[in-house]
Image (cartoon, rainbow, N blue to C red; front, side, top):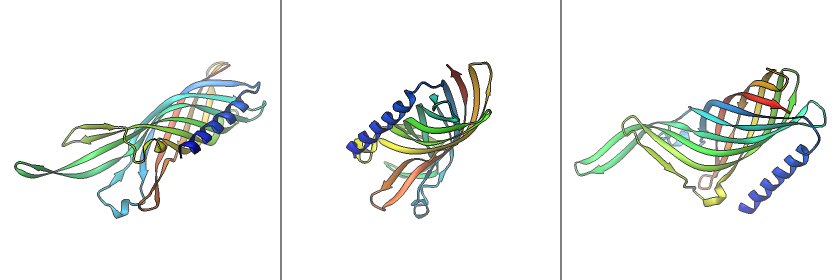
Length: 223
């Protein structure tokens, strides 16, 4: 698994830099991506304690866009810090105390943090654009926040099958609008659908993943 991941990462950067090395127009910028995230879990119907709901997320990063041979087509890459997860409502916990069993009910905000490097193929007209592609995501850690009864935070970088499960893959589809503020500086707004973190449960042989609906906005500098 690790060797296959290294090969895919190498191919990813080879393709990116072979095209970006052409003598073409370039842009750099930053992007903010607030939105909604949730976990698609096919086992949820069998385990009602999961009770997963969408929650608000906020992602951000820098991007690099390069034109392909003076055309309508572009390549986009960058690096982003992404927060994905869900709101697990009405989680019941049972504790053994000296006075007997104590039962609490909490809502848990689950945060899974990734460093994401996308490679997107993009087509542009004067004011509008669309892009499609994927990304390689490196899982850094998970954070769970209990509210309101316990009001505690748990952080962990534990992975169920070690380092081989650190790298994930995601798809991305965006549609956006852009305007020029000056000859070199542009403003853009986009909608983004980003299913990510595909994972196969070895026991039940079923897949789960994060789905993310995002609204991106930011500035791009042309040079």
